[in-house]
Length: 343
Image 1 (cartoon, rainbow, N blue to C red):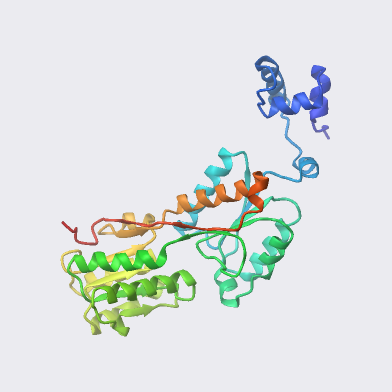
Image 2 (spheres, one colour):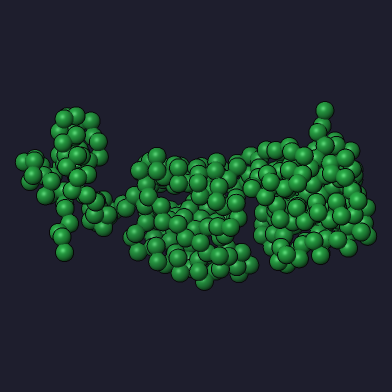
């Protein structure tokens, strides 16, 4: 087996100190351009790879971030990941990504696996099962051991760590206002995430929006679905048939598309006399027919913000002592063809 090239080997080759080689490989201004170029070229030709375990022992830092996402099939989480990855790359960090698949057990196992010194900090969003169990002990242990965590979107209010969230209440409230200005009064709210705090906040925002415009709440128009997406249309059709509905706010794209299909099936014309708005500005909304108006949660901005917050904690020693903060990423309404334009 070929011996792994070390910094010591490179230093011996050029007759310089290990410190000089280290600085050259890290592009330090302290080393002359010609010396850096020679050392970097040699390291590349010899396929030199840093020994991260050794670096970890020396510096107590691996320059690696662990990111745990509940569901990679969700376009929003994919956007968040892109935001994290871009900032991490720009600031010289690597990423180990894991998916909990909405499982508490998988989440605990992942935390245990990565909490052995292989990562410097976590960026994560809670799994549905963790939220339902209301058990965050595995995260508290990580924090107690001095490893920073930044939570995004689905967060645990009881944990003392940085959080990056969306203004779910205000965005739902303003979405109701938008529909009222478009002439709608019978606005349904369709949610597939009422078991999550973000879903409950959106519903509260919807109710406040109705109240703001003196529109009476109709319990039949608050539709909480706890079922597979394949059954959305089957669930929504009888509700649409038996109630007067002229618009829908949905917490996700799949249920919004199902609502749009049922409305068209029942003879409504979108957007002339029926409007649909979905949270999450993903691929489905952009390619639906008609193309869907959405509440954009800016997943990439959320991911980038979380990464910046974590890396600042890791690199700025004075920042460690600062109290955790909750950063709110404002949403935007992206108008497309499923709603009438407000002139």
